Amino acid sequence: MEQTHSVLLLLNFLNYAMIILPAISLIVVYSFIFSHWSSRTVTIPFFSDLDPASPESRFSTAIMSIELIIITIILYCRHSVMEILFKTEKRFEKRFKLVYLAMRIINYFQLSGNLMVIVFNYGLNPIAHNIGMLFMYLGYAIYLFIYDIAVKALGKPSRDFSKIVSAVLMVITPPFIFIRFVYPAYADMIIYSISSVLGLITYVCLYLKLFVCKFDLPEFGIRVTKKIPFNN
Image 1 (tube, rainbow, N blue to C red):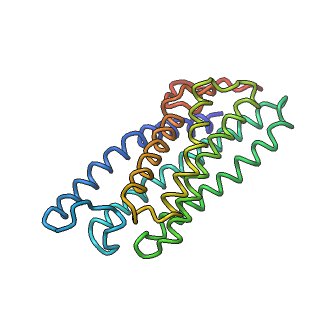
Image 2: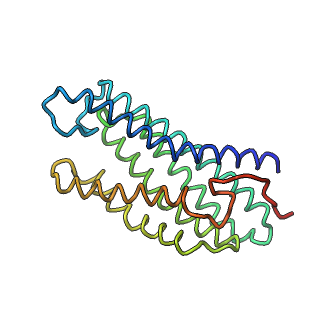
């Protein structure tokens, strides 16, 4: 299982990268934007207000693309490890088939959303960009919910905190997606504020689920220090 261990080490590195990169990107991007908008008349620079050809827009799009690529690799690595676990645990083979199939479908669903967000700039093609964001966020929520089912299928029920985070994510994500990407949130400051709060909760739950929760399967945690004893 040397190959599996290498995948887990890569996953470990990428998990740490995903903890650090968003914080750095937010600081850099907004510092860049505010420094360029300080001499302009607009008081609140939203990403949707930026000219797609402007340095601010290009820079923020590049940072987002890097983040999405890393997230895609993380999800692929997690999926690969889960596939090996499914094949290893022969006694649960029948129960794994449907769960694994669902995870594979959602994985492609997420991947298509990530690619659409990367390829289609919001300012140039907002409809395609928003559809990609919808696929991406909804895919995250569904994938992490199915992850709990997969853990249960492996005979290791998820802890209560992990289940609560999944439940909150499933409840918050749909209204956030609707307000942010379907309803014209930018037309009303109150609606935009609600969208921002829901989005913040979605992000917090996503990161809690991915990086902070002590997973019942240590393979998916952020600490990989030794080889994992797979059953033969």
